[in-house]
Amino acid sequence: MSASSGFSILLKAIDMNVGFIGAGNLALYMSQGLVRSGAIRASQIFASSPETKKPTVKDLKELGVRFSPDNKATVEKSKLLILAVKPKIMPYVLDELSTMVNKDHLIMSFAAGVNISSIEKKLPPDARVMRAMTNTCCAVKEGATVYASGKNSETSDGEMIEQIFGRVGTVEEVEEANIDAITGLSGSGPAYAFEAIEALSDGAVKMGLPRGLAMRLGAQSLIGAGRMLLETGKHPGELKDAICSPEGATIYALHHLEKGGFRSLLIDAVEASCVRTRELQLQGSEDTTNVEAIKKSIRDGLHLQEILENNGAFKK
Ligand SMILES: NC(=O)c1ccc[n+]([C@@H]2O[C@H](COP(=O)([O-])OP(=O)(O)OC[C@H]3O[C@@H](n4cnc5c(N)ncnc54)[C@H](OP(=O)(O)O)[C@@H]3O)[C@@H](O)[C@H]2O)c1
Image (cartoon, rainbow, N blue to C red):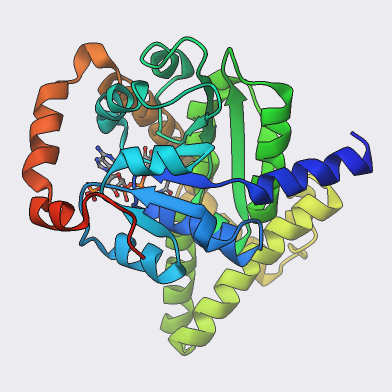
């Protein structure tokens, strides 16, 4: 790609409105990253979900994102539509969207386990669909995003997605078959890291350090290790060996981790998340989901009075 064409794609991405169907954690953290990185202005982001009183909705509004309880308003205002709802809600949302989207929308689903064909089958035949996975570290521009393209998405769609998500971390195209395992690795990954930092700082507190210092140093050790691996391109075993001097403290600690099954536990964790992601595909499939029950629970949860008062329009 020439520098000038890259520049025009960059401008296109910045000029485009982005809509989140679902105003939960993913929508919030991603919006924070996109706004803070300058990839997009908050006023270009639209979001909707039935519940108007959730903390994430409040935080999105505070960021400057335009919120409506009505998905139709988000679809009308946005060219890139990000599906950020739970997998079991997907059949309901896709039914609703199918009457509103057209080939000018790029639909990007982050719903764990829900495959492209089950999304395409519920939308108009020319719908441009992508399936993606990321993580909440988008909020601090350290996300890890991957995407796979549907039957109608174009090369320029992928380039645009790379321009946008490249501002909030890494982004690459992958085979769709890999996305469940990626969910187990980098989708869930920050949760493993947060658990590790908390446990490491517990150890340090036990040995006398104040909690704040322990957490800062634990977090920086993980950040530094990750960056060193990416920048040197070296195998993690080689980098680990450089810390383990003969008879030194670190090799004694690693022996404890080995006895406790540390590496095996991490392998099991990634496998468990991947297997669970595959189960979520069943929840997100029309054939096994009680769409009527979901519709009823959404109707029951709506703040109808508020929606009527606002006429479904966007409120800051
Ligand atoms: N969190 C992560 O780290 C992460 C990372 C990658 C991918 N994902 C995927 O992203 C999706 C969302 O995850 P999340 O963590 O953001 O979940 P979440 O916090 O539960 O957010 C889901 C949002 O969807 C809304 N919603 C429910 N029914 C809706 C409808 N009919 N129309 C529009 N919005 C509706 C919910 O509103 P109510 O609160 O009113 O129900 C809520 O705002 C999931 O499929 C997950 O697999 C999450």
